[in-house]
Amino acid sequence: MSDDDDFMQESDPEQYDFEYEDDDDGSTGDVDIENKYYQAKQLKADDPSAAVDEFLGVPALEETKGDWGFKGLKQAIKLEFSLGRFEDAVAHYKELLTYVKSAVTRNYSEKSINNMLDYIEKVATEQTAYKCMEEFYSLTLETFQSTNNERLALKTNVKLAKLYLDKKDYTSLTSKVREIHKACQKEDGSDDPGKGTYSLEAYALEIQMYAEMKNNKRLKSLYQKALTVRSAVPHPKVQGIIRECGGKMHMSEENWKEAQSDFFESFKNYDEAGSMQRIQVLKYLVLTTMLMKSTINPFDSQETKPYKNDPRISAMTNLVEAYQRDEFHRYESILKDNQDLLADPFIAENIDEVSRNMRSTAVLKLVAPYTRFTLKFISKHVKIPVSEVEDILGVLIVDKKLDASIDQENGTVKVNKSNTSGNSDGGDREHLQRLNEWTTAVEALWTTVLQDGEGFKFEETQSGSNFAPLMNFNLGGDAIPTRGPVRRGGHASFRGGGRGGGIGGLGAAAGGSKLFPQV
Image 1 (cartoon, rainbow, N blue to C red):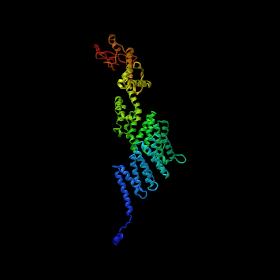
Image 2: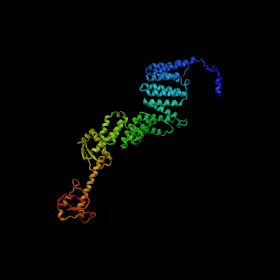
Image 3: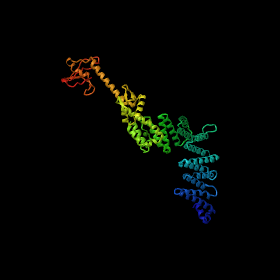
Image 4: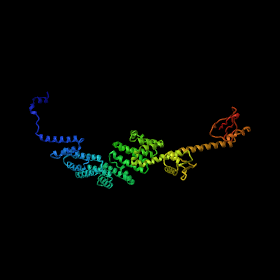
């Protein structure tokens, strides 16, 4: 038998009864506070105003400031803000901040305050909420700067800078961003590696500001600085913002290749962050592909392929397919049926260039077989105004894609015979011209061989009647050039060579049958 068994046998059960201290009054008080808090939470969905009153009653039940009072105030402030009771929310937020110094732990208070600031940032949909938000941020900065909580102070400054950007208060934004950059530096002025994330967020805000102001010179400088920040581990959404603005900057410079690269990187970052902005940036990526005149489908990549059949992007998918196949009328139809695409100012600004490229290609293909045509003819088939037809033709002529002259008075266009466009848009016309040159060269060869070739000697009886058709030989019809000996009456006949290199004799079938020239 073990010692424990002996011990249990020898023990008197009465000697080991638990004794409790008489603390019923304190425990009852905590239970009442807790019950009131959870009763208030049950009212949040059905009667938020009543829930606010219940939550505000929680701190009054505490003899000293504690966790339950902090929780009650926090819930009440969120409800007041969502109900639009902004003044009450600010007043109770001031009270909440008094709990930070002693009633709750530093980590818990920092996390709670940061979550609350995130919450009000998300639910603020009215301009009237911006003033309340600004007061929240200012009160937070005063409190946490006095407690030397530099991390939360930086986070709050970034949120305040975002608010200035939303309000388009660029003066205050510039000042606040400068303050953030200074806080992210060491005493010697060099960048603090531990604060690179906040510095990059400040760059992102500046880049957005200059993008809205269309100050490309300053935007380009900041964009290049942001790409050199290596010490940061930023949120993917921040990187997405920087790359998106960079893509728009390159688009304004008509640097399509760099724009496409930035939009693709922006899409990947937004996708990683779970941001809905990824759909809009994917539309920009498709737009850039068309402007590049690329034959590569942007949905062939592993990252974009899952969105190919997404209904939110289907219009752009159809547009790029019609563009790459040169289906002009289908392209115009898709654009007409999806006017919501033009709701985005950036797409509306750049889609005109794509449409103009499509119309120019359609005009070149239409006029390829003609040497003379009217402006109304183009207008009718391409379905654009005559004035636009004239503009397109003017650009094509200046760009040397079409060698022609426009008679504005009569509304006609004459294509010069020397038109030798070497670009892909004039491929049909060039093909016809080269075919014509080849035909001319073949005719010249026949003439030279039949008239000047010394190797051809015809019997006098046939020289008068059968030679004439040869001189007027036509490449069309039933004339079939072949190689081999001439057969007369079923027998081959050959003559000696001449300066043509010993080419065989030429004859015709007896009995006046159809002539087949032979080479």
